[in-house]
Length: 337
Image (cartoon, rainbow, N blue to C red; front, top):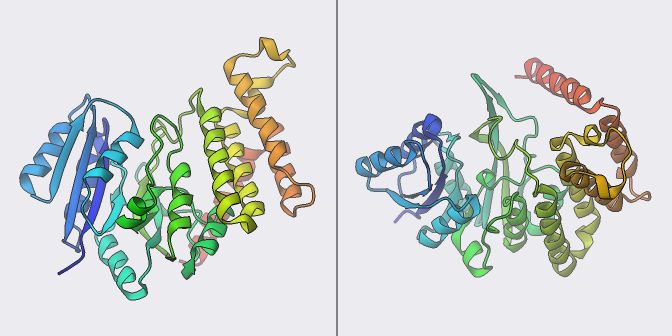
């Protein structure tokens, strides 16, 4: 009998994109699926769309409740899952029709605990291979997987990999309720708990970039939430993978640097002010800057690069550098299709 895969889809006010997402799951060439839709208190027609798919296909199951956030929705789905494998999908994205089939083939061939793959970025009507493509690492152990995660070779999105359900269950891995950046707080634990992981550079997922999604909209609690997550990562790596601490520091710097960009960086600190008179955005920026300097190590080869990034952001040059980098990457892809 074929091994089963539980696909968990949290749903919240995504009626515009939901049918495409669920249709891509329904049409997977690998058929032994348990599809768990978790309606997180949607106020649009998302619940109705979920119910229609449940009526059309017995593999679809709906859990519906009041709005409690993405982590809670994922945890509810994980509690109900019975599959040999678990895969989390964002409800505004969609899958290559062979994603599950190819992943299961790699699981069976290499006897790994996690299979990771790359993705396409979708911006409006434009679809392109992601700028940060997974390296074709093949079969690696947890130490090497974490090294590449911390060095930025692999993003923290949980839709970039499928894991054996036992990895979650045996290690009591759940998503932190009420906290932002729940993928960052979870992915490293899954990689650390896995004996072996297979990394493929093949793009099998379509990631839709939406300016109003929680990934792109800053919140006042972002810095506090990230610092809690970073503290947990420190404890975990110190206790289990001590040799990876230098690489972890690099990731922690980059995570806080990206927060600084989301918070509009130095633009919130246009004039010097006493700490007692700073507003919330300014306090968060000051806190992020302080922690960024804490994670820098002047003895590290990363230090000069980090300083350049900070100065580029401070003098409003970082966005220009990113545009040039993306243009060069796009030009390179056109030359080598």
